[in-house]
Length: 142
Image 1 (cartoon, rainbow, N blue to C red):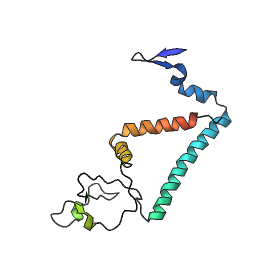
Image 2: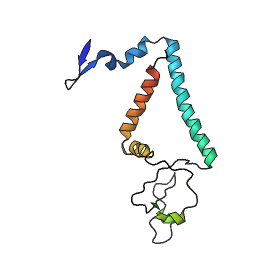
Image 3: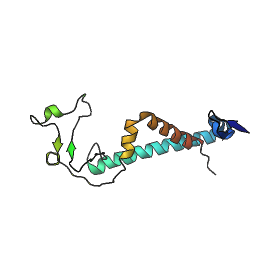
Image 4: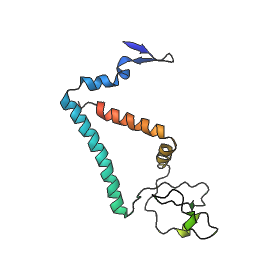
């Protein structure tokens, strides 16, 4: 059976019936899929906490945008409503490389674009998380 989409595309009926796969699973399979999803989430959290311990920083991975090679920073505390410009010396709007204590331990170009896209387009982030969660829950072991 084939159902017609809204714009004239034809999609198989099975791709439109997401929850039908959940109904077909017995309770044991469903519990297994939920536990599998929970293990993936907890593994990601453990990796993040491990990076915090290894780097000794609350933010072991940060994204820095570099337009022209002239690197300037604007800081903001986690619990502050505004940026930290009030703490900078008078007339200073940005921190420069010489003002920052610390060092980069690694550099992965363009990987941070995923974080930027997720923050700029939150609906995309939630859609991606929903698709990944549905995939984990609906994927059957062979």
